[in-house]
Each structure stands twice: as C-alpha cells, then as structure tokens.
Image (tube, rainbow over all chains, first blue to last red):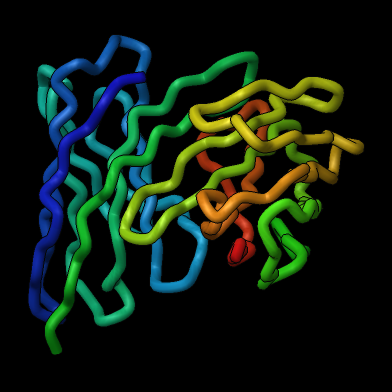
Length: 112
Length: 113
C-alpha cells in the first residue's frame, strides 16, 4: 500500500488559513488523494479528495503538486471546530471497495 | 437517515470471552469495513466486504471473524478476546459507484481485561 508522510502536529490561530502538507512520493497514476479528519472521540469524516487538479468544496481546498508527489489541504479560515487529527490517504480500490491506509495523521490545534 | 450505526458503544470483556460487534448502514452502500484504532494511532483495516456475500482480510485480521449478514449489516466477532484487542472499533461503508468517501460510525470502545 502506498504511504504518506505528514507532520505529527501543527498549530494555528482562529480565523487564519491553515496549510496541512502531505508527501506521497510513491503515488501511482491511479491513486486518488483523500483527506479525512477525526474530531475528538468521533469516527473519521471525509474532507476532500482529488486526482490531479486542485479541488475545492465547502470544507476545504486541496492543492496537488504537478508531479503528484505532494499535496496540501487548505482550511481557509480555521475555527475552533477544526481542531482534529487530519489524515492524508492514498485510496486503493479493490473489487469496488476502497482500501484506506491511515497513517498517524497531523494533530491540528487551533488557538483562540 | 441514521447513517452508520454501531452497537454496543462500550464493552468490557474478560480474556477468553467472545462477543459480536454489530454494524448497520441505511445508505444502500455496497461496501462495508471494520477498523480498529489503538491509542494515538491511525485506523487499521481488519476486514472489509466489497459487496453482499463477499468478505476479505485487511491489514490486521488475526483473532477476528466477520459476517456480511445482508446488504445493511456487517458484524465483527471476537471468538476468544485478548488484552491486545483492547481498542476502539469503527465500522464504515461506501457507495459503490461514487467511491468518493467512506462514512464512519461512532465507534465501539472495547476493553479486554
């Protein structure tokens, strides 16, 4: 399974943008880049995903490097509710099922 | 629309006891998954079911069995619980065509003494 590398922790201030980096140098051409986050005492929740182009949704933006060996999750205006562990995952699909390999993720702390 | 539900929320077992964790989804998803999460770690896939009638091993299947009872339900069984199986267990499901995301349940916190 392809691996990703993320910083263990990051800190930011409320209402400021946050850029969460992820390296995935062994990514294959068909791997989608997925981001999930896990709030305290909850199951993970999907944030965003992409293949080659940058993507935006109501939660965040995903910037993917041209060589696809790295990506950055962007939270445009962090709130206290964004404090969570963020996981960058390369999604594998087997017989229609998604196989997600979670690393340790980045623990994001938001200061008021 | 409840999404993914799991029962029980908490459970304490003694070593050697058995139990079944239940999971159900009401989103008409084909694929379902069981993960475990140890303290300070990411989730690890135990078993998954790509569609009704099929199950496959994930990263850490030893000590577990699963049953895909029907399209809605996917259970995880511990036949002889060990302290190493103390963990939080998450069930998830995903749409067969969109394949864009997995939806996770709230988790079951299991302690094996």
